Amino acid sequence: MSLLRLDDVHAYYGPSHILRGVSFDIERGEIVTLLGRNGAGKTTTVRSIAGTEPPEVRSGTIRFDGTDITDWPADDVAMGGIGVVPSMPSASSR
Image (cartoon, rainbow, N blue to C red; front, side, top):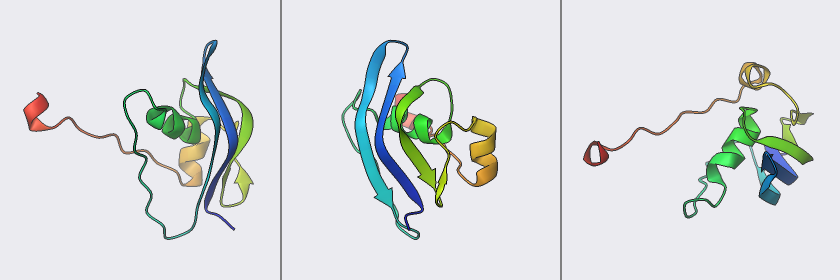
């Protein structure tokens, strides 16, 4: 069983359809990186998993350790074991 599984996730910012059918599995012990150009949906994917607002996941499922967490609020997701560590700007960009 996957530790984290996204299955056909569609997420929106208001009327804007940002994630269109994102699906992937992460197995226990794997290290995964999301790569893509600006606006590709990396942050929206992470926010959808973490339950932070926005975005709004309108269809699809997000499962963590077999439990559907799609509609969980952010504090419940965090208490369930998922955390987000934001990146810091590099010294050259300050």
